[in-house]
Amino acid sequence: MPTVFIAGSIKIRKLHPLFVERISNIVSESLAVIVGDASGADTSVQNELLRQNAQDVTVYCTSDEPRNNVGDWRVKRIQSSAEPGTRAFFTAKDLQMAKDADYGLMLWDAASTGTLSNVFELLKARKKCVVYVNKNQNFINVKEPNDILNLVAVMSEGAKSQAEKKIGLRSKVFQITNEQLGMPL
View 1 (cartoon, rainbow, N blue to C red):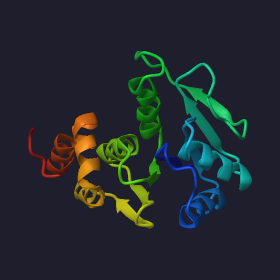
View 2: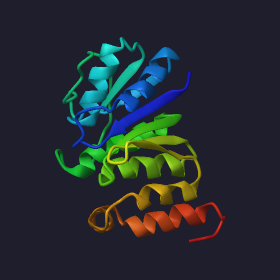
View 3: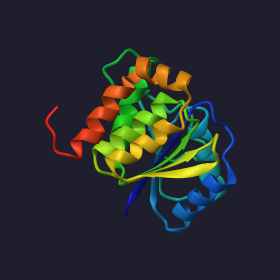
């Protein structure tokens, strides 16, 4: 059965009805869902999955116990060699979810580098992802490397600057878009 990685920006706490509709489709098709344990979008998604009585949900965490698991679902603990509490510590969980998933559904504020990194990881693994851009209230399908440019286009200059500092945005875009051409880096 296909597995969907659902995640989003930690700053987003309210799910837009269009995003909830996508979750409903996933639940009605009895697809497996993997979700993180962070506050914000992860917890809001968990609450929605519980409300819809989703059955096949796994909560990923890097701590001994998940920070949030509102449905008391099964837990997958991911080992991280990074210092506990750091961004790198929690990134280990995100990387594993991208590996374990067949598809992604992301809720993005057009700034979060964590959510954007998840999209990059899915795309590198040639996995499709649908991204709901909260500020524009629309979905962007990311199926091919050049689709990432549509996401970057909705970012403000300030968000792009922060993404450059945090994740090396230009380099990531260059790598992913040139990979499709088979060009060595």
